[in-house]
Amino acid sequence: SPPSSTSSWPSTKPSNATSVTVSPAGRGNWFASRAERCDADEMSFFESIPPPPPPEPARSVRPAWMRPDAVIPGSVAGEVLLARTGRAAVALGSFRAYPNGFEFTVHVRTREPDEFGLGADPFELHGLPRRPGPQAVGDQLRLGLEYADGRRAATTGRMWPLDDVDAGQLILITDGSGGDDHCWDGRFWVHPLPPDGPVTFVMAWPKYEMAEASAEFDGAAISAGARRAVSLWPAEPQD
Image (cartoon, rainbow, N blue to C red; front, side, top):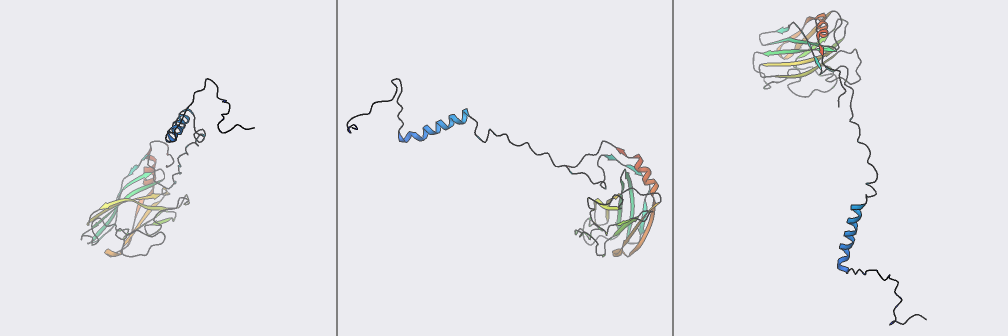
């Protein structure tokens, strides 16, 4: 028969065992110290799984039409006075040639201060952003060029070419400018290099009653300047 409530069960504890009594208040500290020992002695399940390698940095291929950074351009002598009146003048200069195109500076001078303020861009409707595609013709200065093979480009066309533009498409884009209320200088980039024959520049500025006018520049001189350009190191993809 089972023992009475006053009887005791036989002890199963080894004779050399030590009794540990944990009070209810100390149980939290006991479990915490046990967890700390496990963390110190063992790696967690998730730490045992190696993390994936970091992704390779994405690098895009530089479009072929862009001006190269690692090139010292070949200078091309010559200036072009496109138009001059009693109120304004527009000229081209500082021609520099690269293996895939050339750049030049447009010099704009006005006799009266520009009504739209300091350094207003005559090509950009006085600093307002242009919409892509065909532009409405207003008072802005317009500039274009034509190669001997008939290819044309102008500031009234697309503001920025697409990355997959045709290799032979003629591109004309702005590349920095500055000035004050009487003077404005803007740098332009043209791709690709011209074929044999003249490069014809065309301008018009309705605001100053400058009708369409044109002047030619020697395309062979630009090509010769490109041959003098110095490539410093191989081009690298952009980050």
